[in-house]
Image 1 (tube, rainbow, N blue to C red):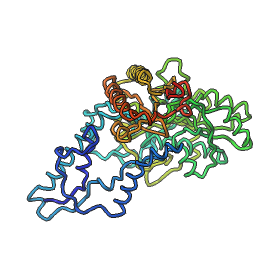
Image 2: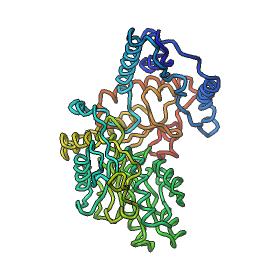
Image 3: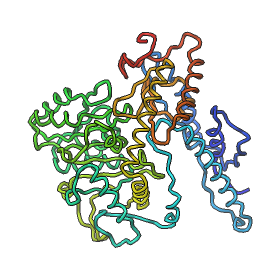
Image 4: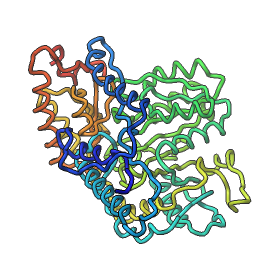
Length: 489
């Protein structure tokens, strides 16, 4: 038989079985080309052992980070075709069977996706006709390069839509469609650094890890600011820290929805704090709106993110609330700032002002397609649905005696971390310490939430039935009013 694709098929059969146990009948694994190397097996064993330490570590007042499984033990190996492959067609049949089973696993995993902010409800079938083209928007989106297979006309249309959303005129903004939200943060902070080369970066402790990655990459001084219980930046601590460095300009990352708790920093209070502390005209604000940056404009009475305020840039993810089959994002800044980091490139016949050189030209078309289909009204309806369903989940959790919290402007429901890591993996929950969260997206309906809740309540009863193990106290994470442990119930 044609050579191996690793033992990935066995892994797919495991992921498709609801209780996490291997489903031998799902598919017969293709023979492995060779056993995994000893160091890989040792790493996998170490990872498995680490899982067993979680409970022990938690009892000692700390929780070790549980890492995912080592993919080297379940990858699809690549093998050179045999001499008679063209005659037998065996390799094509092998690859077709792998892809078919992989697709089935994707369908199954999509049914149990709750912990990460991705809208999985989309249909781009009409764009399939474009997948045969290598569409690349390398260089500046507003200046054509000599490479003619691009989608700049779609990209600039999308950028114009976001500029209007955030109140910035066409002749006053610059931006581009990024590969992800992290790239938007990297670019926004880079612009701030170029505007104020000696500036200090300030970010709340609950900011996305990419913000601190940017500080390391750019060798910037970075100060972490404390947060309130909600996850929002503590402006009293922020003021104390900027006053300790009053001689240097401030570059601030403002969160429009934190990663774990979905908290929205008070942009107006941040600006007021800066101006009252003597930083007027000596600060640059980047707004990280990866998820909620596109939801908050459609929430009634929510504070506005707008360039009418003294902010420097805003970035959002395109594959999160909008929904897209590939990661992407949007970064918008003021045109006057971009000259500080751009240069002309003769090879491209365009300008270099982006983080990446080659850029996915398909992503702008996907975003353009959805923006045209849904528009402002469509997004407003979806935001309202997400918020309603998030409140439903939070209320159901509390009715079941499970500690939970939901911030006012958020669709991220935070609750006590499930004791069983298999349950966490099955529902793809994002966890941090003693808490986990569900991000209610347009693709998350009441039926899915009910299935999750019923399974959680049922399994939770078995986790704590001995009367010795107790649900974790999460008062330090969510506040005593949201904790339903034995002490705070």
